[in-house]
Length: 427
Image (cartoon, rainbow, N blue to C red; front, side, top):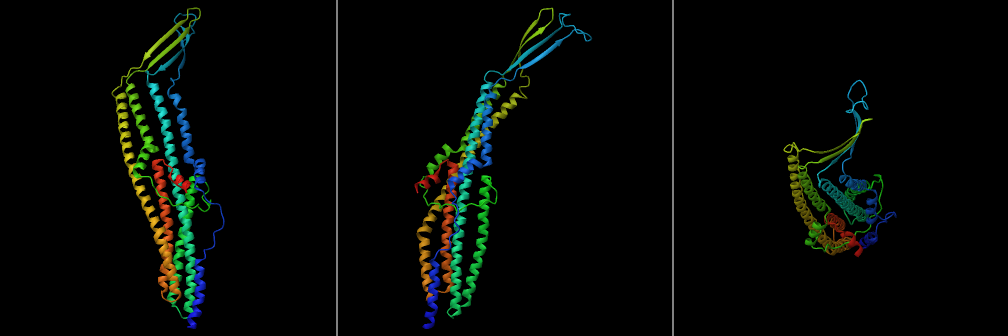
């Protein structure tokens, strides 16, 4: 009896340490998602490039509605090749003329309307890129949160295992345990180290992806991600689908493409109609009376079958392609909304089960296992399995929370809604 009591009290002291949290990481700035998104607006090269492209399209609107540049021409008519006869011969003279091409009425208006639509398309492309960029950052933020939390969990688990190893060693030294328990604890710690190193590398990879999107050096380190709140996606699927149809920049851009191609077809039909040319000029003849000239020319669409007809067929085919592309994009969009909605709801349900059932039960089980191991009613392998279960559920909890955020961030991109920010503000 004295021998058992002697081994019991050191174990009580050691396992009491299990409930002490691991040393806190060095204090550093918290990583805020809102600030991260603001940096993306200011620094992402792709987004800045699209903003400049919009400006370029805006500057092209007025030129499309402007007449072609007039042509100023100078002429010399001389009777002889060996002497200058201007002022000596009535047919000789020096003159100038101005000519102006005038497209058939309606062509310039259609080109201007097409240019305006191109500006709108560029804006929708920029909007879509912005949503995709924000989605990428939110996904990376959720992954960063998961990896950081998981490393904390693994560090805490390692501390538990080291204390378990110490306890097993003490029990073995006083004849209350077996050497297998010590070896098994060491193996568990070695396996844990194998998990920690790759996860640290994955964390660095996520930070590198964030740096790439924000045009920072690859070696830049980020602070601890702020806690991701738990929330429920209460918006019905039908409402999300309606929002996607109404707000998706990609669908809007596809609709504008159809409008642009419709104008292209109308313009192609007008190309069957001739353009005009007006020319006025004056010829100086020295002592003779000056001559004035006015000329009106009309283009002859001589190669209608080879040129205008083929261009019309091409524009009709492009219009048909744009309509099919819109239908395909809409179907794909709705399928992706449905898929990510199901992923989000699944993660949401798993979070509830893990938080409300698995984690509390695993914690109670470990507490019971600890108490029973101290008095020899539970073997060491069972005790290790209970430690592993608790921390595995804790890591699963953070993984499911990360996956929920990633799924909802993809829904945001597809629907144009700001779900995560709204939920966070509510909390």
